[in-house]
Image 1 (cartoon, rainbow, N blue to C red):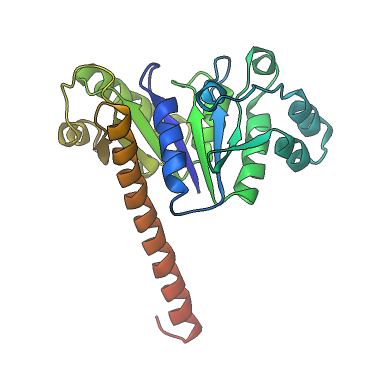
Image 2: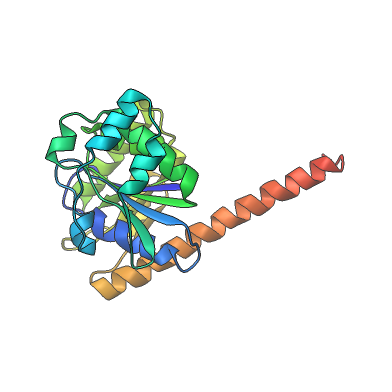
Length: 239
């Protein structure tokens, strides 16, 4: 399952929320990777205190048709019980395209049960396009203000219509990086999709994100059970 944290504009706290979400998943799942898809200014490596590695060998592997999995695995580091793929700095940004990021994601999807992605804001990076196209769930992180919510709604419509990313994949996540003006209920009315909110402060963020992750996993598990039941019923000739 691929879960992306994305926003219409910058400064909404995506990196903090994506990191908290990945860490909360380890309570329920073992194979988790947190991938930094923020080009030019990646921050996941700073959050976890690890070095940002040059990804030139990934680019070369994709271009030459070599085994991408081997080189991607070279860049994975385990911290606090989860795997980390550090981001793509300014040198990588100048040459990486959508196909390179999609190749990386294909490797991660094959090797991990859950892939959590911290994306660049907006719609201007090929890494963002690759992440959103491949995501099962997209948390659109917004400040709890009317302007931020309206911008988010407009951007979601663009991504849904122009990139053919189903609107049902999106969930709005309000992060109190500024004075709260809009609650989750009001946000849902504006954007017309499910919205969550987290409270200010590190402890509150961890608690609230853990609650959201648990809710998401419960629904995911229920879907798997329903599919299995349908398959079993079909095998016995039950319609």
